[in-house]
Image 1 (cartoon, rainbow, N blue to C red):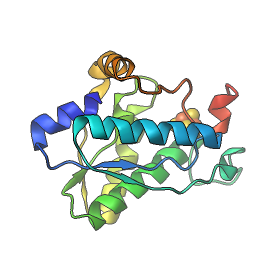
Image 2 (cartoon, rainbow, N blue to C red):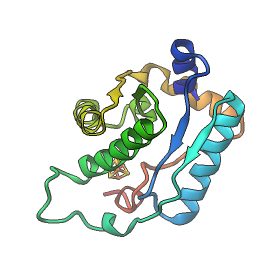
Image 3 (cartoon, rainbow, N blue to C red):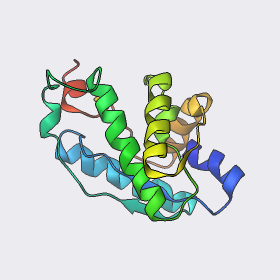
Image 4 (cartoon, rainbow, N blue to C red):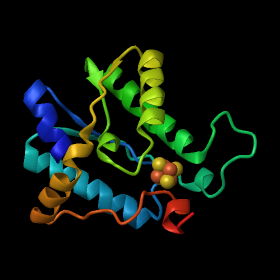
Length: 161
Ligand code: SF4
């Protein structure tokens, strides 16, 4: 919710939400997060596009032979590419991610991954460090009665690996 507030200051009504979280485990959790995204966008008055793809299988184990250094880089890449592709398809000039509000993610790695995805799909990646609004975002979500996640998302993060 904080990210939407910040982007609205810059872009007014020209922003669109995009939900794409294929590796959230289990499916109930995917549904809860999707519901929260929908509600947050309704509250803030912005449209939301939902990607219904759900495919947690590849996340149970990280492939031994991988082009990625770890599973989070793979995860960032999939999300960045989905978002960049959707932004290009829907004629948005920029794209970014709510991941950049998290103090638990690797910002430098995410930045590189998102910039690369932007180049691949011909849409500019907008880097914003939303971390200063992490607590405010949590507070807004609590006050609005939104579900708040208890772990990052994939099956590995659920079991604490
Ligand atoms: S820990 Fe989080 S960022 Fe890393 S792979 Fe799992 S869901 Fe993705």
